[in-house]
Image 1: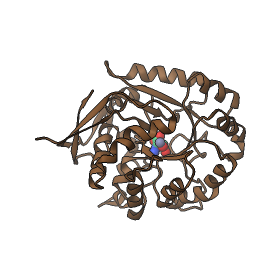
Image 2: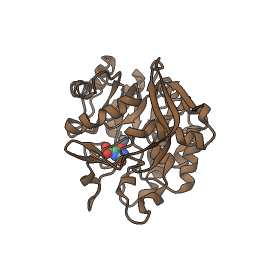
Image 3: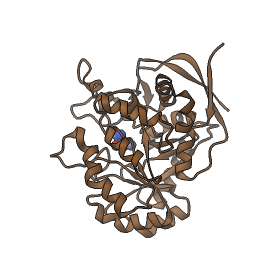
Image 4: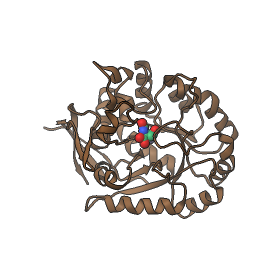
Length: 347
Ligand code: NCD
Ligand code: ZN
C-alpha cells in the first residue's frame, strides 16, 4: 500500500512573489501547496502604504492560475519615514497583516530599509498597541561583521533591545539560520516566533562551494555551519509552537544568479512542501509536521486554521533542472534531485 500523509492545508508565512512577468510565472507554485502566504513587500519601489499593498494584491490575484484557492496576506515595508497613522489605518482596514523590517542594505531590494531602529520607534509603538506583527530580517549590515556572524550579532545588538523596549510587540524572527537564533526564540516570551526555510534545514554553507561556486545555494541570511543546521532542524521539529513554515522562496532569473555578482535568493516554491516533509521524516517527526506547516503560523498570527487538506504520497519526484519564467529560466531548489514525497491532492 502506498504511504500517504494528509495534513490540514498549510500556509507559507514568508514568500517573495515578485511582480510583472515573474509574478505570473511563480504565483501558481505557491498557490498549489499553500492556502495563504505572507507576501514580502520588497518590490522596487517597495510597498510602503495601503494603496500600494491593495494594488499589489490585485496583481497577485490576477496572476493566479484559474481555479486557485489562495489568499495573499500583504505586508508593509518599513522605512525611516514609516507613518504610524498609515500603518494603523491600513492594518484596521485589512490592507496588510504585518510590517517588515529590513535593515537598510541587508538583502535584495532593501536600499529603502531602516537605517536606525530609533527612526521607527513611533511605528513600533503603534504596532505594539494595535497588536500588529513585526517581521524582522535579523542581520546587521556593518561591513566589519563577518557575513556568517550577522544574525548572531543582530540578536546581541538589536533584537534584545527591541524585545526590551517593546515587550508586548509580536515579532517573527524571519528565516532563522543559527543555533543562537533558535535559542533566542525558544527562550523568549510567547510573542516571539520564527519562520524556518527548507534550505536552512537542508543545506549548510558547504553547499555553496561544492566542487565550485554554487550560486543557487546562495541566499540571505547565508547558510551556516552544519552545527547550526542541526540546531535549526531540532527547533523546527521540536513541536514548539514558536517555529513555523516560511519558505523565503525568492526567485531570480538564472542570468542574475549565475553572474559575477549574483543575487541572493533561493527559489523553492515548486517543491517546498515536499522538501519540508522529507526533513521531518528524516528527523522522525512526521507527527509534528502538520503543526509546523499548518497550525503554529495561524495561531501566532491569530488567524483561523485552514479547513481543507493536502495529501502527500511517498513516491519519488524528480525536481526539474530549471523552469520557464518571464522569457528566461529560474532554477528551483533541489534542481535535478529526487525527493521522496510527492504532493498528490488538495482537498
Ligand atoms: C530575498 C529576495 O531575493 O527578495 N533574498 C534572499 O536571499 N532571501 C530577500 C530576503 O528575504 O532576504
Ligand atoms: Zn525573504
